Length: 195
Image 1: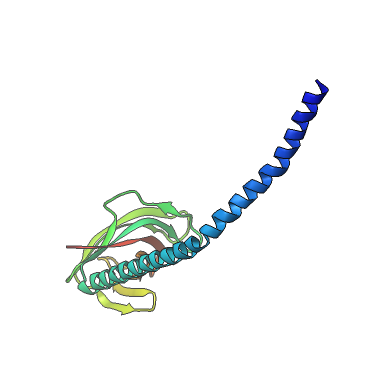
Image 2: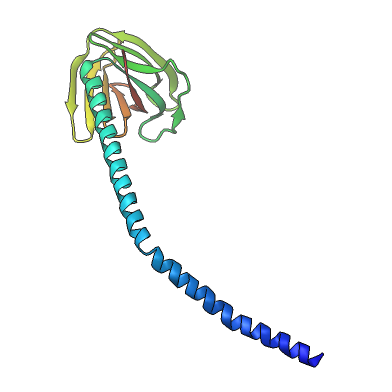
């Protein structure tokens, strides 16, 4: 019995010594055989990565060209997603799909929520108007996109100034609406082409 136990114990000790040597040699052989493969794979990945970057750059350039063409066509809509009263009003979401500032070749169509009043609490109203004369309309291209401004009295005694900032890279837009009597309001949203 003792002899069988000694033989088993010797076998286990031998296995503990021999198996790690065999495993480590197999690992070395495998890594030597595949040492070239990671370099080739890295070259493949870098080529795919370069092609992907080039495709993204081409898509971005096409998008910026499309947005610039849209602004120059004078046929676009600013769709607001949120707004707030300056200087410290709370941000409010706009879920009404009718709200927009649309610029067409000869006029502007405005349907925007707007706070009126001289002191808080302000009253929320909707500007619902079509302007056929855009006083001082300018569209200036900047490094980041466009700055579009125009004035209107909106058939009231109040003079309103619309300033629209369009970021050509991200497609985001911000509209600032200021007036002679009421607090300024800022809107955030996006630009859509009108076909």
